[in-house]
Structures are given as C-alpha cells and as structure tokens.
Image (cartoon, rainbow, N blue to C red; front, side):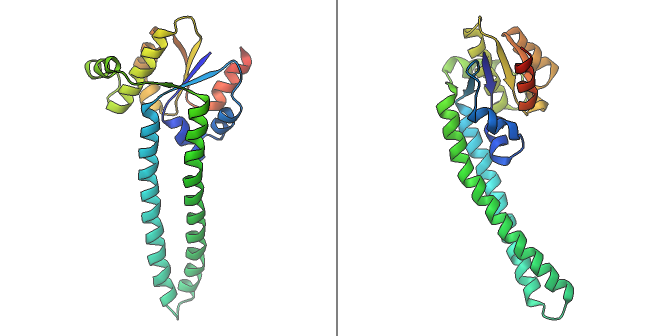
Length: 198
C-alpha cells in the first residue's frame, strides 16, 4: 500500500498537531510505503522558517513587556506580571529549541523511510496547465501525487493530509479516486483505524 503524505505531515509532527503522525513515522507498518513529493521538504523548511521568525518576534515582545514590568517598582500587578512573563519567556525559549531540534530529526526520518516523488518537467507543465487546487504549491503537490499514482495502478493508494481546505475538497478527492487514490484521511488516527480494519 502507498500512503501519500504532503507538507502537513512533517509540520504536524514538529508542531505536535497530530501526535499519531510521529508514531506512524517511527513505526511504519511493513505493509505501508510512505511517499511524499520532494518539493514538500522545501515547503516544510519554508513554513517552519516563517514560524520560527514569528516565535522569535513573540519572544522579543515578551522580553520588552518583561522589561517594562520589571521597571515598575510600585505596582503589585506589575510584579505579578513580571513573574508570569519571565516564566513565559523561558517556556517560549524551550518550545523554540524543541521545534529547532525536531525539524531536522523529522525530515531525516522521513527522507529515510519515505519514497521521494521527484518533480519533473512534465509534472510542472501539467500543474501549470491544469489548476485543480487554487493555491499553486498545493496544486503542484497534487499533480506530483497524481502522476505517481498513475504509475502504480495495481497498488492500493491512500492520501493523508491535514490540509482539508485543499485536498479534502470533493472535486480534488474525485480526481484522486480517478488516479486510483481511493481513500483520503485528514488525521493519522483515521488512517490507522482504517488500516486495522483491512
């Protein structure tokens, strides 16, 4: 069986949004071959880079507010706020460090375990010709998956994507079914429950 994943899979592991995804990556059943478009690695790095910049800006704002609260020597509220902000700075720093260490670890595991679907000129041109998803990157990812699925007609194929706004649309799911990708799951637990029932 081929399990297609896209950018949301590593992102959900790094951000803790889908705890079962990390378990699936660590203990992938022997009957399941994970496949991911190669461009998803670059997209994951870009998404997490933006996220880290946002978290760093938040850290800077926390530190400015902490400094302001510490400078107020007469207010009990400022003293209490200072205490909570200091704790928030430490927790935010710990979370930043977790994300920074988990990202390379997750991408490394995925690169080791998953088949990388390479982008070809044909796939890019088909993506530019046929807009199945409005967002260009997701449209390109979809075309990578469709092309790969058509090259493996005899395999059972499913898609796992937390991006329900794009990959969960009925029109996209129909195109996937026409390429032999019979099932769509938005959460890893849904996929694992279905897999156990097979």
